[in-house]
Length: 626
Image (tube, rainbow, N blue to C red):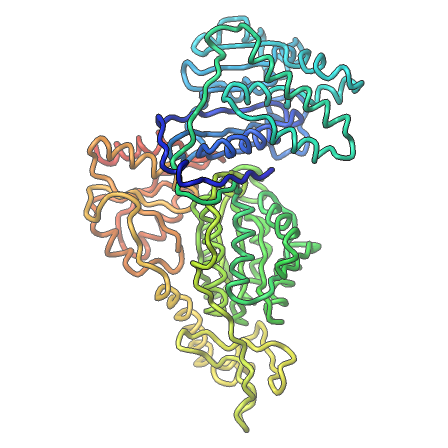
């Protein structure tokens, strides 16, 4: 997705307007360019100074049969002049490019919402593919919504006719026609989109001009068509924001930037070994463009080679990083055990998706928490961190690097498909405000008669990090258990117990360096606490805010450090009368909290491949307090 940057001045930050928001969903066939349309509308929205959150929702198939419900791709954006934390429960506007898009998405539309449909695609064949016996634009079945339909396909063909494109190429421009209409509806500038098109089609200027013509035609249609009260121009004021430089960022971009920033703060070059898998592939793509920051990227032949190459880089004195999603993480598991046994710093990014097995490759889920905390053979503890939003992923990536390098351990950073693909504004931070955590390699020659001791430890139980080739420090580490003192192979029962204890104590000691758990809203001792982790932050925060406005005694607690958990978490949880845990799995964090603190945490579950709606969590709060 193209990135927009916007500098908020002190005057803009002080300005206030009416607080409002709008949710728009673009939906069409997976070949209709809905993700591109949504991405460019997001760019224009960011440049307008609105707060925003997006939700790209596309099929797993590379190309499902055209016109079928299986191939529907959608992009939802919630934007406004108030704080936006989710992509919205229900769209106010649905742009449906064909019958299948209408069929899949119309029930999500807010009652009284606006449907904009391309009637040119509502022919008998497409209606049959979508499962319609009669045309819904004509049979009254859409009466609870406002409906505007016009032949977007023909209007696009008319707009690009002067450029001599074939019919197929010309119809590919209809997403730009639709975008032009949307830009007019919300008083957006076309200039940045035109510049982007010229850059994208620099080698085919006739395509750039055709798409710009379609964009302008859609905008002009909104200006000149006498449709009536259903289609009006509506301007939304900029959202309140602190002064500074802002840019839109997806979770994958944010993680990539955070990993690079973390490596710089540690004073290390970074090596990323990855293998393409949805939705983690974007991290490899972004990092490959950051070579000037001493970043090496390697697309391996498989998941095992990817993580093993990263482990090798860590052994050589670089920051090793790898990423994947659930199935790929399963393949990497044995190598994670090797990194734990050799006690090398390694960051593993898990962009969770619907499972098990191949599951739902393009849909979101939080079902890898057990895998992250427990999913290895032997007692193999590993710190686990979870990002709450695309912007938060930047700081979480830095934190993962800090823990990995300071404690000589692999760390897993959890995101999910929603965070990875969604976008939101991010205030570009002042990096001078981040405390460096430089790595110190062990270079002192061994004491005479003792030999090299690679498992010598500091007060945090982190072992020394010796780069290969350091004079007098030739050493050996590996997956077989080592002697607690000498580092030589040692199978003895007493030694294995001692090393297992040390590895566990080291990871649990990470809790000494993380902040106490704070509440996002409410006070300790409330009647109910809603506990969340990861991408459930937005809907939980909004639901708790709404219920507190109605004087319900509710608190919100959101956990970043999944393992080890913050030291004060047990005491804090026990202060509440009731605890509920909304999560997109069958109750994994709930089980972890019950296990660690014996609190009666109750689950609120959703495993549909879709994020929670605010209303769903609000209803769960009301039920828990009833």
